[in-house]
Length: 415
Image 1 (tube, one colour):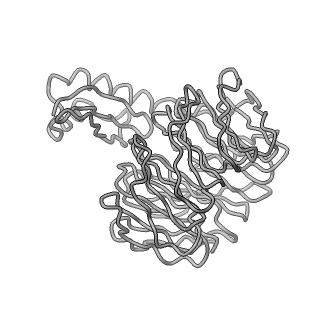
Image 2 (spheres, one colour):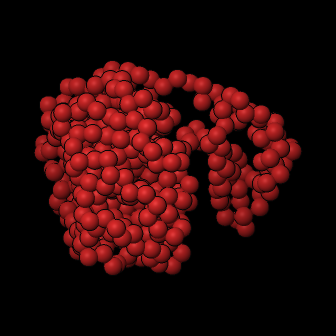
């Protein structure tokens, strides 16, 4: 093995080692989630060099510089107020989805008009209109952290992989027999998973465009999919009340998570890939062991359907939001509730943590998004201006920009 270069990951804190093994370029991640201003950096470097064969004493000065940058990031205070920067609106039919790339420089919007549009966030100008789907474009996502590719999933039963810079279509993935409603890339950007109303999920090779596996066994629509950080495990959540946990080694089902009494609305891995959080229309969230498939906790705080869930990037916090208009933040060490997010006047359909993990962003049918202190539960800001339900909200990678997407057919950029 030959070390090539270091890459920094600020959120959650870590270092990526890029190395060459037998002519193949590979990466390895070292998590440094607990690093802060009190950390003895020289002692930490001693530990890293001892435990990681790719690291040597010759790299100590470079490692010290990288670790100092990580510490500096932990000292930056998060924003408590955002101002409206731009309003993007040009689709002729309603929006279905929006997403932002890692750098925050580009946004993609999908629509009932069968197209997607890529926008420059600095200028607010439309860069590309992606045409080719024959029905509603419902699902879309960037291949973050790279951000050079984009995938779209449509009611026309196909997915398309696009070049973000040129708008060129690399591949059209065909094989599903019903609408595609959810998509996810693995972190390495080598595999794509698509979930469909045909009760199956399919794995696609990004380079070749070939289908490498079809995951079967659910008895109803698959509505959410996820990879863990390593790309070794996959989740498929279904209206059949279950979640499938799969291995990418042979694409075998490892466990079926059974226990919910209603349709699954969302499923997520924590950062380590050791825990799974699921939300359901049965008004509960469940916490599962990714190793054994055992249900560890059932969270019964809500009075109506769970519409979305989220882990913070470090995995120390989790949040659930519901049609009851409430949000709850949990300490994942104990799964005790630490704060209640109260203030929306309608159902909350979307929740995300800021990259730093101390803020929560929610989007609601009351036409507002709200920024919350995750630990205190206090509302720091109400983002107003949309004239219809907000169905999407996201932070950029630095956490200094927010996007909100609404059924009023507009996307708002807040900075």
